[in-house]
Length: 228
Image 1 (cartoon, rainbow, N blue to C red):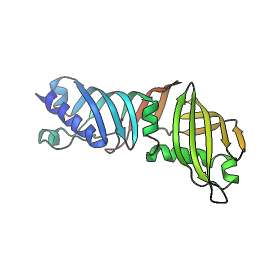
Image 2 (cartoon, one colour):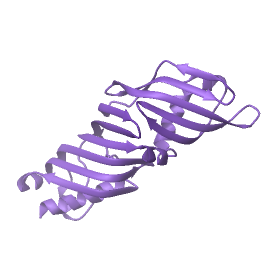
Image 3 (tube, rainbow, N blue to C red):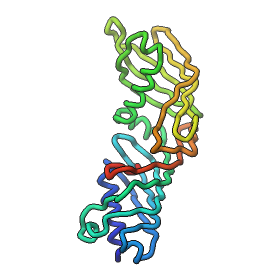
Image 4 (cartoon, one colour):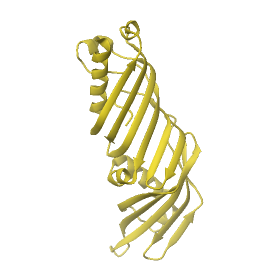
């Protein structure tokens, strides 16, 4: 019975962190006496069609261990809460349709903005904002198309293509970055690095036609964070 109560509480907690989740499965692994001490030896999660802060994820699998939680409150049917940071193993997949749907998400927009600010060509032409229209996944590359206003306030198209791979567990390496505009300017940047922070450790990143596969570890430091 305690397993069923806890599984329901974990599902409710996860659903509260995302805008959408389909086919959410939770498996609690542990003995009753461990769980009744507010300790989960292991939890296995899987879900489909997740939307987290505007990011669309096709499939997500999570494995966590050694989890302390607020047992007295859960038994009173109050929300599940973590008592301390945990490290979880994560596997996820994103397809082209997911990525296109994610294009307006704050997380992706922030990443694209940071990328643009690091490119001298964009800085030199005082391009402050780009309205991204499309993003596509190719073999080891991402291709984007956007619209910006030129100095005469005319709408112009901009094309950006970049390879993507891991520099290390915490850093993405974008190279080469290729930018082209209908105004015929073009730039090729050798490499741009994106620091993902110490809370993210990516072990594997596979970018193939129409799909991105990723696996690694994420540290969940507070009650507002969750996987996917």
